[in-house]
Amino acid sequence: MYNKISVLIADDNCDFANELSHYLKSQPDFNVVGVAYDGDEAYKMVIETKPDIALIDIVMPKRDGLAVLKKLANTSLEKIPECVA
Image (cartoon, rainbow, N blue to C red; front, side, top):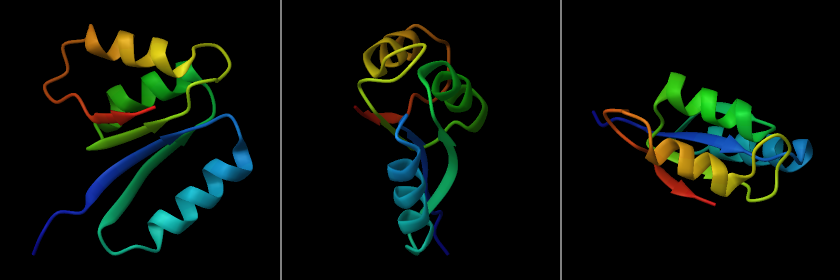
């Protein structure tokens, strides 16, 4: 058996984030580990869940997607997720 790809979704558009989450949950290869609606929440969830992939919106409240990526690059996480902004 194989491990599913863990995905974190971060987007302030709640409808889009929830639809994407619902779609990915229906796919056999993906495991959605969380949905964040602002940059601070996204950063915290990446640290907590350690996803394989983080889909991060560029424009979000509190911290934009690029700031999240920059902050993640300066952390001591054992595994930095592949990030798509």
